[in-house]
Amino acid sequence: MLQTFHQFGQLPWELREMIWTLVIRPARPGVHIFEMYSYRDGEVSKKYDVAPFVRNRPPDSQLTATMSGTNRNPSTYLIDGGLWTACRESRLVIERAFESRKWDAVRDWQIKRRHRPSFVWDELTTPARPTNYDIYEENMPATGYFTADNSTKRFFTVFPHRDLIYLQPHNAETIDWCQISWSIPFTDYGSRGARHIALDFDSLGSVRKNSTLFENFMEAAFDNQVLSDLFFIDSEYKITAAESKKADKGERDVFYASDRRFVEVWENEGPGETRCQRFVKELGEAIEEVNLWKYERDWVHPDFNFGILACEYL
Image (cartoon, rainbow, N blue to C red; front, side, top):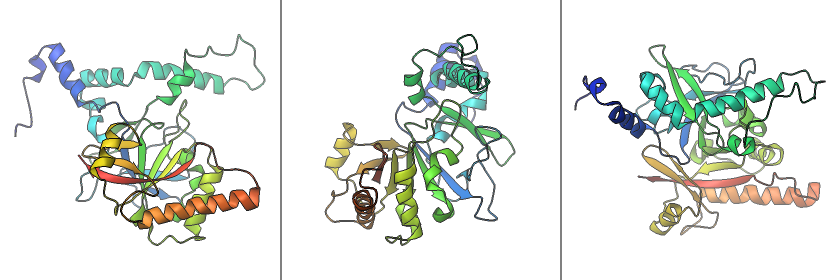
Protein backbone atom coordinates (compact mmCIF):
# COMPACT_ATOMS: atom_id res chain seq x y z
CA MET A 1 0.00 0.00 0.00
CA LEU A 2 1.24 3.48 -0.88
CA GLN A 3 2.40 5.25 2.31
CA THR A 4 3.40 8.60 0.78
CA PHE A 5 1.67 10.73 -1.85
CA HIS A 6 4.29 13.22 -3.01
CA GLN A 7 1.92 15.14 -5.29
CA PHE A 8 -0.56 15.97 -2.50
CA GLY A 9 0.59 19.60 -2.36
CA GLN A 10 -0.14 19.99 -6.08
CA LEU A 11 -3.83 19.19 -5.62
CA PRO A 12 -6.29 22.13 -5.59
CA TRP A 13 -6.83 23.64 -2.12
CA GLU A 14 -10.50 22.67 -2.15
CA LEU A 15 -9.57 19.01 -2.63
CA ARG A 16 -6.81 19.11 -0.01
CA GLU A 17 -9.24 20.73 2.44
CA MET A 18 -11.79 18.01 1.75
CA ILE A 19 -9.21 15.28 2.44
CA TRP A 20 -8.09 16.87 5.72
CA THR A 21 -11.70 17.27 6.79
CA LEU A 22 -12.45 13.58 6.15
CA VAL A 23 -9.83 12.68 8.78
CA ILE A 24 -11.71 14.48 11.57
CA ARG A 25 -13.82 12.32 13.89
CA PRO A 26 -17.63 12.29 13.51
CA ALA A 27 -19.49 14.74 15.78
CA ARG A 28 -20.66 12.19 18.34
CA PRO A 29 -19.58 11.08 21.84
CA GLY A 30 -16.12 9.54 21.65
CA VAL A 31 -14.06 7.16 23.78
CA HIS A 32 -10.63 8.05 25.16
CA ILE A 33 -8.57 5.30 26.82
CA PHE A 34 -5.90 6.22 29.36
CA GLU A 35 -3.90 4.34 31.92
CA MET A 36 -3.98 6.05 35.30
CA TYR A 37 -1.82 6.03 38.36
CA SER A 38 -1.85 7.87 41.65
CA TYR A 39 1.23 9.47 43.15
CA ARG A 40 0.62 7.10 46.07
CA ASP A 41 1.35 4.11 43.82
CA GLY A 42 5.12 4.49 44.16
CA GLU A 43 7.42 3.93 41.20
CA VAL A 44 5.55 3.64 37.89
CA SER A 45 6.50 4.18 34.27
CA LYS A 46 5.98 7.81 33.25
CA LYS A 47 6.17 7.09 29.54
CA TYR A 48 3.47 8.87 27.52
CA ASP A 49 2.32 10.91 30.52
CA VAL A 50 -0.35 13.47 29.62
CA ALA A 51 0.78 17.01 30.42
CA PRO A 52 -1.46 18.92 32.89
CA PHE A 53 -3.91 21.26 31.17
CA VAL A 54 -3.50 23.97 33.82
CA ARG A 55 -0.08 25.00 35.07
CA ASN A 56 0.80 25.17 38.76
CA ARG A 57 -2.06 22.83 39.62
CA PRO A 58 -0.58 19.37 40.25
CA PRO A 59 -3.28 16.69 39.90
CA ASP A 60 -3.76 13.95 42.45
CA SER A 61 -3.57 11.36 39.68
CA GLN A 62 -1.78 11.13 36.35
CA LEU A 63 -3.05 9.94 32.99
CA THR A 64 -0.87 8.06 30.52
CA ALA A 65 -1.67 7.46 26.86
CA THR A 66 -1.94 3.73 26.10
CA MET A 67 0.55 3.47 23.25
CA SER A 68 2.31 0.23 24.18
CA GLY A 69 1.30 -3.41 24.05
CA THR A 70 0.06 -5.69 21.29
CA ASN A 71 -3.50 -4.33 21.19
CA ARG A 72 -4.06 -1.24 19.07
CA ASN A 73 -5.45 1.74 20.96
CA PRO A 74 -8.94 2.44 19.50
CA SER A 75 -9.25 5.82 21.26
CA THR A 76 -11.01 8.63 19.46
CA TYR A 77 -8.14 11.00 20.26
CA LEU A 78 -5.85 9.07 17.87
CA ILE A 79 -8.22 9.43 14.90
CA ASP A 80 -7.45 13.07 14.16
CA GLY A 81 -4.73 14.05 16.64
CA GLY A 82 -2.09 14.07 13.90
CA LEU A 83 -3.81 17.01 12.20
CA TRP A 84 -2.52 19.35 14.92
CA THR A 85 1.10 18.94 13.78
CA ALA A 86 1.03 17.50 10.22
CA CYS A 87 1.22 20.93 8.54
CA ARG A 88 -0.30 24.41 8.65
CA GLU A 89 -3.22 23.40 6.45
CA SER A 90 -4.21 20.44 8.61
CA ARG A 91 -3.97 22.56 11.77
CA LEU A 92 -6.17 25.22 10.18
CA VAL A 93 -8.80 22.61 9.32
CA ILE A 94 -8.91 21.04 12.80
CA GLU A 95 -8.91 24.44 14.53
CA ARG A 96 -11.89 25.44 12.43
CA ALA A 97 -13.68 22.13 13.04
CA PHE A 98 -13.27 22.46 16.82
CA GLU A 99 -13.95 26.24 16.76
CA SER A 100 -10.69 27.03 18.54
CA ARG A 101 -10.97 30.82 18.24
CA LYS A 102 -14.39 30.89 19.88
CA TRP A 103 -13.26 28.71 22.77
CA ASP A 104 -10.03 30.67 23.19
CA ALA A 105 -12.16 33.78 23.67
CA VAL A 106 -14.17 32.01 26.38
CA ARG A 107 -10.99 30.85 28.14
CA ASP A 108 -9.48 34.35 27.94
CA TRP A 109 -12.64 35.73 29.55
CA GLN A 110 -12.42 33.19 32.36
CA ILE A 111 -8.72 33.91 32.95
CA LYS A 112 -9.29 37.66 33.13
CA ARG A 113 -12.30 37.19 35.39
CA ARG A 114 -10.48 34.80 37.72
CA HIS A 115 -7.33 36.89 38.06
CA ARG A 116 -8.92 40.25 38.74
CA PRO A 117 -8.65 41.57 42.33
CA SER A 118 -11.27 39.90 44.53
CA PHE A 119 -12.46 43.25 45.91
CA VAL A 120 -13.22 44.70 42.46
CA TRP A 121 -16.73 44.12 41.14
CA ASP A 122 -17.55 47.20 39.11
CA GLU A 123 -18.50 46.98 35.45
CA LEU A 124 -15.37 48.81 34.26
CA THR A 125 -13.00 46.11 35.51
CA THR A 126 -15.24 43.09 34.89
CA PRO A 127 -14.61 41.59 31.41
CA ALA A 128 -17.63 41.26 29.16
CA ARG A 129 -19.22 37.81 29.20
CA PRO A 130 -19.05 35.98 25.84
CA THR A 131 -22.36 35.50 24.06
CA ASN A 132 -24.23 32.29 24.97
CA TYR A 133 -21.44 31.31 27.33
CA ASP A 134 -23.49 28.76 29.30
CA ILE A 135 -24.39 26.89 26.11
CA TYR A 136 -20.82 27.08 24.82
CA GLU A 137 -19.31 25.57 27.94
CA GLU A 138 -21.11 22.27 27.51
CA ASN A 139 -19.54 21.79 24.07
CA MET A 140 -16.07 23.12 24.85
CA PRO A 141 -13.17 20.91 23.70
CA ALA A 142 -9.90 20.51 25.60
CA THR A 143 -6.62 19.90 23.76
CA GLY A 144 -3.52 18.53 25.45
CA TYR A 145 -0.48 16.45 24.58
CA PHE A 146 1.78 13.62 25.62
CA THR A 147 5.35 12.94 24.53
CA ALA A 148 5.91 10.16 22.00
CA ASP A 149 8.90 7.80 21.65
CA ASN A 150 10.85 10.25 19.49
CA SER A 151 10.38 13.07 22.05
CA THR A 152 7.83 14.87 19.90
CA LYS A 153 4.57 16.15 21.33
CA ARG A 154 1.46 14.22 20.31
CA PHE A 155 -1.56 16.48 20.59
CA PHE A 156 -5.10 15.21 21.16
CA THR A 157 -8.54 16.66 21.80
CA VAL A 158 -11.35 15.52 24.07
CA PHE A 159 -14.80 16.89 24.80
CA PRO A 160 -14.95 16.47 28.62
CA HIS A 161 -18.70 16.99 28.87
CA ARG A 162 -19.83 14.51 26.21
CA ASP A 163 -17.03 11.95 25.68
CA LEU A 164 -16.32 8.80 27.68
CA ILE A 165 -13.02 8.71 29.56
CA TYR A 166 -12.11 5.02 29.83
CA LEU A 167 -9.62 4.69 32.69
CA GLN A 168 -7.26 1.78 33.31
CA PRO A 169 -5.90 2.52 36.81
CA HIS A 170 -2.78 0.81 38.15
CA ASN A 171 -4.56 0.53 41.49
CA ALA A 172 -8.19 1.61 41.72
CA GLU A 173 -8.01 1.80 45.53
CA THR A 174 -5.45 4.66 45.49
CA ILE A 175 -7.59 6.91 43.26
CA ASP A 176 -9.60 9.69 44.88
CA TRP A 177 -12.96 8.93 43.26
CA CYS A 178 -14.67 11.86 44.98
CA GLN A 179 -12.48 14.28 43.04
CA ILE A 180 -11.88 12.17 39.95
CA SER A 181 -13.19 14.75 37.46
CA TRP A 182 -10.77 17.36 38.82
CA SER A 183 -7.87 14.98 39.34
CA ILE A 184 -7.51 14.00 35.70
CA PRO A 185 -5.83 16.78 33.69
CA PHE A 186 -8.79 17.78 31.50
CA THR A 187 -9.73 20.61 33.83
CA ASP A 188 -9.12 23.75 31.82
CA TYR A 189 -10.49 27.25 32.10
CA GLY A 190 -14.09 26.91 30.92
CA SER A 191 -14.31 23.16 31.52
CA ARG A 192 -15.91 21.69 34.62
CA GLY A 193 -14.13 18.37 34.21
CA ALA A 194 -15.02 14.97 32.77
CA ARG A 195 -18.67 13.96 33.05
CA HIS A 196 -18.58 10.31 31.90
CA ILE A 197 -15.95 7.89 33.20
CA ALA A 198 -15.69 4.13 32.66
CA LEU A 199 -13.75 1.30 34.28
CA ASP A 200 -13.25 -2.28 33.13
CA PHE A 201 -15.18 -4.28 35.71
CA ASP A 202 -12.98 -7.37 35.30
CA SER A 203 -9.84 -5.37 36.13
CA LEU A 204 -11.23 -4.49 39.57
CA GLY A 205 -10.95 -8.07 40.76
CA SER A 206 -13.35 -9.30 43.41
CA VAL A 207 -15.06 -6.15 44.71
CA ARG A 208 -17.18 -7.06 47.70
CA LYS A 209 -19.75 -5.00 49.52
CA ASN A 210 -18.20 -2.91 52.32
CA SER A 211 -14.72 -3.31 50.82
CA THR A 212 -12.48 -0.24 50.51
CA LEU A 213 -13.12 0.12 46.78
CA PHE A 214 -16.88 -0.36 47.22
CA GLU A 215 -16.91 2.43 49.83
CA ASN A 216 -14.80 4.65 47.53
CA PHE A 217 -17.39 4.34 44.79
CA MET A 218 -20.11 5.14 47.34
CA GLU A 219 -18.28 8.32 48.30
CA ALA A 220 -18.06 9.29 44.63
CA ALA A 221 -21.86 9.16 44.43
CA PHE A 222 -22.34 11.40 47.47
CA ASP A 223 -19.48 13.88 47.20
CA ASN A 224 -18.85 14.33 43.48
CA GLN A 225 -20.29 17.54 42.04
CA VAL A 226 -19.09 17.16 38.43
CA LEU A 227 -19.25 13.51 37.39
CA SER A 228 -22.56 12.42 35.84
CA ASP A 229 -21.84 8.76 35.10
CA LEU A 230 -19.45 6.19 36.48
CA PHE A 231 -19.78 3.26 34.11
CA PHE A 232 -18.49 -0.29 34.51
CA ILE A 233 -17.69 -2.14 31.29
CA ASP A 234 -19.24 -5.60 31.37
CA SER A 235 -17.33 -8.13 29.26
CA GLU A 236 -19.92 -10.85 29.97
CA TYR A 237 -22.84 -8.98 28.46
CA LYS A 238 -23.53 -9.44 24.74
CA ILE A 239 -25.55 -6.80 22.93
CA THR A 240 -28.61 -8.19 21.14
CA ALA A 241 -29.85 -7.00 17.76
CA ALA A 242 -32.85 -5.33 19.41
CA GLU A 243 -30.62 -3.45 21.86
CA SER A 244 -28.32 -2.40 19.03
CA LYS A 245 -31.28 -0.91 17.16
CA LYS A 246 -32.32 1.02 20.26
CA ALA A 247 -28.79 2.38 20.48
CA ASP A 248 -28.96 3.46 16.83
CA LYS A 249 -32.15 5.37 17.60
CA GLY A 250 -30.51 7.23 20.48
CA GLU A 251 -32.64 5.56 23.15
CA ARG A 252 -29.60 4.94 25.38
CA ASP A 253 -26.10 6.32 25.87
CA VAL A 254 -23.58 5.26 23.23
CA PHE A 255 -19.88 6.18 23.02
CA TYR A 256 -17.83 5.55 19.87
CA ALA A 257 -14.20 4.47 19.57
CA SER A 258 -12.51 3.97 16.18
CA ASP A 259 -13.55 0.32 15.72
CA ARG A 260 -16.13 -0.30 18.46
CA ARG A 261 -18.78 1.37 20.51
CA PHE A 262 -19.85 1.08 24.12
CA VAL A 263 -23.60 0.80 24.59
CA GLU A 264 -25.45 1.44 27.84
CA VAL A 265 -26.95 -1.66 29.41
CA TRP A 266 -29.76 -1.43 31.91
CA GLU A 267 -29.62 -3.20 35.24
CA ASN A 268 -32.26 -5.86 34.57
CA GLU A 269 -31.55 -6.55 30.88
CA GLY A 270 -30.22 -9.76 29.42
CA PRO A 271 -31.01 -13.46 29.72
CA GLY A 272 -29.31 -13.69 33.11
CA GLU A 273 -27.71 -11.41 35.66
CA THR A 274 -23.98 -10.86 35.11
CA ARG A 275 -21.47 -10.21 37.89
CA CYS A 276 -21.25 -6.57 36.83
CA GLN A 277 -25.02 -6.12 36.90
CA ARG A 278 -25.14 -7.66 40.37
CA PHE A 279 -22.38 -5.29 41.55
CA VAL A 280 -24.13 -2.18 40.23
CA LYS A 281 -27.37 -3.33 41.82
CA GLU A 282 -25.57 -3.73 45.16
CA LEU A 283 -24.17 -0.20 44.84
CA GLY A 284 -27.65 1.17 44.19
CA GLU A 285 -29.14 -0.70 47.14
CA ALA A 286 -26.35 0.48 49.46
CA ILE A 287 -26.86 4.11 48.42
CA GLU A 288 -30.60 3.80 48.95
CA GLU A 289 -29.98 2.38 52.41
CA VAL A 290 -27.68 5.27 53.33
CA ASN A 291 -30.23 7.79 52.08
CA LEU A 292 -33.01 6.27 54.16
CA TRP A 293 -31.24 5.55 57.45
CA LYS A 294 -28.22 7.81 57.79
CA TYR A 295 -29.06 11.10 56.11
CA GLU A 296 -32.87 10.88 55.97
CA ARG A 297 -32.79 12.70 52.65
CA ASP A 298 -31.35 12.21 49.19
CA TRP A 299 -27.70 13.22 49.23
CA VAL A 300 -26.81 11.70 45.89
CA HIS A 301 -25.97 14.28 43.25
CA PRO A 302 -29.18 14.48 41.17
CA ASP A 303 -27.37 13.84 37.87
CA PHE A 304 -25.15 11.03 39.13
CA ASN A 305 -25.56 7.50 37.84
CA PHE A 306 -23.81 4.15 38.24
CA GLY A 307 -24.14 2.50 34.83
CA ILE A 308 -23.08 -0.48 32.74
CA LEU A 309 -21.61 -0.48 29.26
CA ALA A 310 -21.19 -3.39 26.87
CA CYS A 311 -18.78 -3.41 23.94
CA GLU A 312 -20.05 -3.84 20.39
CA TYR A 313 -17.57 -4.02 17.51
CA LEU A 314 -18.42 -2.03 14.40
